[in-house]
Image 1 (cartoon, each protein chain N blue to C red):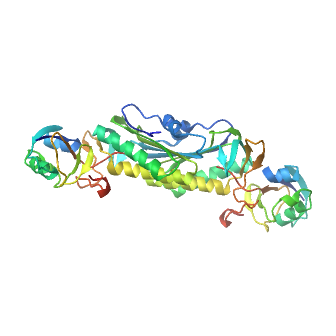
Image 2 (cartoon, rainbow over the protein chains, first blue to last red):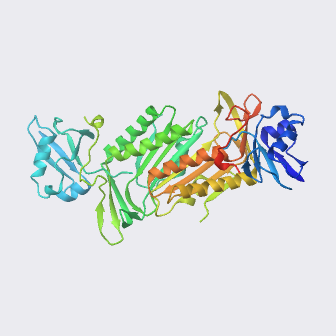
Image 3 (cartoon, each protein chain N blue to C red):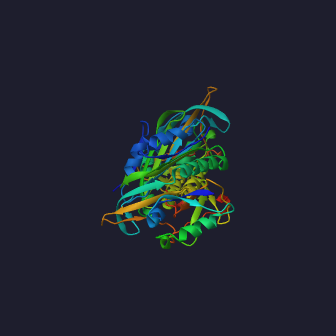
Length: 80
Length: 80
Length: 152
Length: 152
């Protein structure tokens, strides 16, 4: 199955992109997305366990993913 | 000596006036003004110990008065 | 600079209060507005008339604004209190506080409105829909007390 | 009625926020404004650029406004957060709360701004007078945590 990964702000700068498509096995979790992310150039500038949202809801490392999910990797919030 | 007594809001309504002049002995205090006030018609609608300001500063019953002082008898505050 | 603190017979303009305290060093602005509301203690209000011992009230407002700026370091304060006849939803009091940080702005704003109610000689007479009108007595006892520190 | 809660590319208008929450049942209106200030952590700022995960940020703002009205009974709430490039002294966030009584208005306003900072996916990049620019990390650790109750 395929999911869309979104990157923002400092994380988008670090990876040099704001989104990419990722193919995953059907039982994949958020942790699998982060494992893939860590292999990409620039990922050394990301923290070990960044905050993640799945389909615009904050999620855990163990959250199961489904086809076409939108997985957002969320840098430190700085609203206000 | 003479002082000016000011009344406001519900106290002015009770006494039917907003100010009057009062002759007092030279060693008079705020308590003497209140004693005079209590003899006036309508004064039964005032509390036993109303708040008083002398020359626009909150004062005590024992505050000494001087000629031409402005003595204001202050109903319950309701600003805001 | 002496903070804005005054009695006001014309409608209070919230925007000008905010402008009076804003500055590039302040990350937070807090504006409190007291508004005439239609119900008080279960009675239907049609309007309120505010009056004051004007010179003393003006001085007390000014004292409070200056005390707030001294107590809450780096704050800028503006206070306006309306006098005269106010209709429903009109603003009776406006308090603007600016500070580099929001926590202090909240604390200062709260302190100012409580202090204003505690010591500024202003009175209000509510006009009710049933035709009656009455002086408001928040103490319920017909008399106010002020704490020793404001007594001479 | 659904409370006003939105991202905003144009300047925030404090007056319209106040108007959005005002009503004859509310005796107190509190307006919080977050403002771009010239110094942050000892560095001279010339401007800030705000960006967001827009659909999620808009939903979180709306959730917070609705949660505030549920938590602080009888309150009316409006929230706007600015996106894009802001100059010094421009308003980045405006939060208006109206309530029959002032104590609740203060508590609700404070709760909303803390909640906004805790969970709305918005980021800011500060532009400094020395020409550098940097993403602001309030955590200082490069990563955020959110409490379990917002996790799915």
